[in-house]
Length: 231
Image 1 (cartoon, one colour):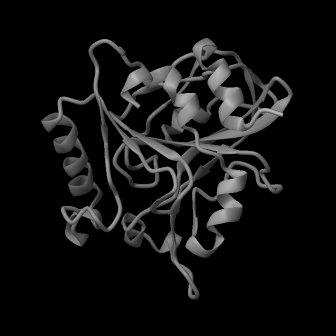
Image 2 (cartoon, rainbow, N blue to C red):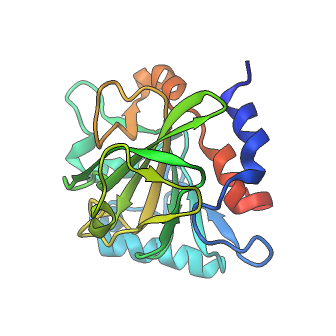
């Protein structure tokens, strides 16, 4: 039986792009949100506009259309929100890939899917508007969580609604709609939703790393269809 990476890689040429990107001329920039990035002070992280300015300046300096990164990354940036803190151990390990870009950026479905669930997770630091789609590719069933969307992206949705390949179904939200983050897409693959609707942890405790990474495989093979050789 093929692994997730093998199956997705074999199908990637047939996938639609997730965001608009010209492989021949556009650039992406890998962004580091671990403790190694000493540029990100608490003063920057504590204020969303300052955080957004930092991201935008990085993209501008690199002449990059998008920033990207984050899978299996132990991030310090989650200290900005109590949403990720627990008494025994804070949640800091990121389980998806982030694509940082402009608010309003269109999001496209890479393959035929149905709506699993959706919600407005509007706690500070959470996903904001969230859509989860279910895919079945060569009998491999999995879900993808799309987080930090615009509020209007939730309009007209219903459970089991077909979202065809190539359809624009969402946009990146502004801070007031996306959990008060710089505009970006949280893109996370999930096998078992564990009974959850409209939400699933995008960040876990490091002590629970293995079980979460097993349930949330690396999304990069899907995104190759969008970014090609740039990944």
